[in-house]
Image 1 (cartoon, rainbow, N blue to C red):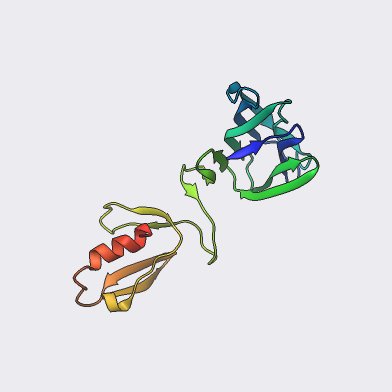
Image 2: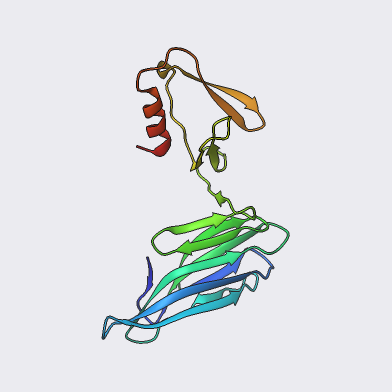
Length: 191
């Protein structure tokens, strides 16, 4: 949840250089007097290069503003660096994202920040230098997506080979342990 609970807090957006890309923020206002929703709004905006623009303006007096959804789409033909700035009366708290052409940065209350590629896939980053990882069976059966790490043990009868082109294959190299399938599922699902 992202709250703006004083008349000096707002959410701003700027780019690492020149560029004009669209976005919008959906928020609700909660009266601190009645504790009820007093307003709901969507504010469309367009970036102005390195000059910050308001995505969520400061709330009025006796009002807490809660961000519900935010999106920013890189409609240019090149990657851009986008900064989402929580401005607390001039003190900035920045989140910096690199958006490839066609990427959409979004925030959804209860789920947090994510980036969707132009192909509609979730984009992630992490340690290890790779990108999002998709785990799929060779026959196209169910897959697991946005995994950042796979754990396995040769003692479970598994080996990994590099097939090139960013593809690794996991094979059974021996007699599997009786609960191997359940253990592999648990590892992939984070259990």
